[in-house]
Length: 430
Ligand code: DOR
Ligand code: ZN
Image (tube, rainbow, N blue to C red; front, side, top):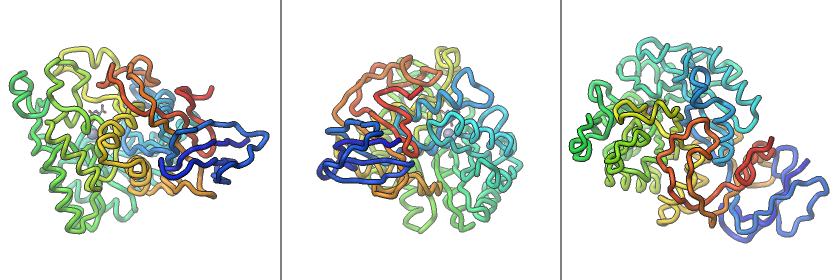
């Protein structure tokens, strides 16, 4: 069985070509190729071929909160969003702090078969911020954990973070930090600024994020370690990243689509769907994040896909759980905020949504060039289509999108994982 992608432009560049996929690989590329008898033909005229997207930051809620999402529904959302690999955060119940949980997540993802679900291991036992996990055991397990994070919570004790970085360096794995100094965010539900003050919402200052980013850059420098910053949200974080990179510190960072597009003026409705950690900031922060992504100061886009059930979101703003869906809207928001204004080309989209995340975490078979002999982890995009977001129509078990009723450019028309079609025209194959 092969797949024949007809008349597609690689990275949206050059003349259209046909791309033949067999046995999980790209086996031929050229104009006017013969269509093999057994081929499934994807007619991709006027469409763009990209390497499958890689998301370093998702919450799939399994085990423990399957009423909000599970690996099956989250995998469908990922495939429909053009992803071929996602990293599932460790703040599950039980926490992914041992191979029992991380191996389950990997196994279940492979069983579902729509996207490679890579488990993220916790840095500390039960996310308690105190006792390091056995990262080595999780790395050596079937799930081959290569990224560790207490995301949802910050590894705030500097000595614990230092030890984690040292330990991770020895193992060749990545520590991803949710940068939030907890002493500065007690009770906080919104970005600290004029909007939160006017609305009577307790504020989350930029310094809570920036102080940890700066500290961790210095800890990484001294340990000769790598550190990755989750969901960068402020202009100050961008400045610190720029400084740290200029010093030669091994620091990388991601930005979410919602921080690129939205700001805290949306909070005026007190709609719990706008509550997220870190919070939506000010327009000037969103602009700085877009520039940083365009310039490579921020390395990649990650969704922080965070499903929550209706009873957890449709309530008083301060009681709403933080988090937003992201997998099916990520590409469109990146096109809206970055491609349309000319900040990124489609070639760059491949870099920030596939190649860079694959490189940061060390996935050998993702984010590869669109060439003969390469693994067929692919996304086909219609750049001219538009669509209107409807939470209840998304594949996630939850509906908590902040983009409800917004109309966006670009749709994913097909996703291929190792040559198998995992999404096509808005549906996953049965
Ligand atoms: O908004 C968020 N939601 N931020 C986090 O760090 C955790 C996440 C979740 O698990 O819901
Ligand atoms: Zn987080």
